[in-house]
Length: 147
Length: 157
Image (cartoon, rainbow over all chains, first blue to last red):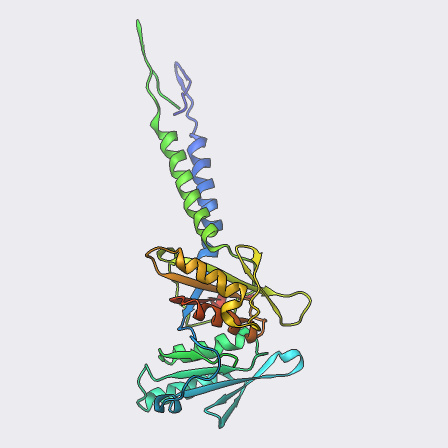
């Protein structure tokens, strides 16, 4: 505490500045560092164990296949092909709607979903496809890897 | 400031604990935050946007952060970096012979009891080929956890 000078008949009160500055610096550091901690999130998945196509089972034949094909100059764009037949253009909203449709038809959450991107497809499109599958409440999502 | 009780004929000097506790708390917060950054060893990358990603606490695991930054000499090539060091993910001589797989296998052997987790921080514009190679190496090393780091839509530039 800061000593206050007292004179007879005159009282001078000064607010203590030290703890105020102390707290302000603490808050400044807290708010500077917190945004970097909260802006990131994580998508979790299983890793492929082997290179190339695995032995195909009946369940694999029934899996949902999301194929991503690189398009445009320097492969900036992408085309989505669902189950080798349905071409969805580059609309990930349509992909999400189609996947939610499969769920509505009664496919369980653990039904396998395979994301098969072309090797030059940008990482952001792979994450968008993964995002669509997670938002459609599929849990068994796998990635195709180079053979 | 310390309040020193003064009385005539004798001085009673006491320690002021308040600033001491204050500084200890400051140091505690500082080292907690620094250790978090130190553990993650992050590189500046533009992360892909995800709406489905969850906030998780990586401190529960033994983590290896694999950064794939954009190769400035290529339009969509990536450079794999761990702890700021460039690591080769070339699998042309077999996955297990790659530098990355070897490094992950060694890390797995020395991890202790906690689960080993790979946190992938890949630039949004790199090709899937770079990510797939890292996935293969991590899979061959028997890594248990695989987290893809993303950013929230409102935080994207």
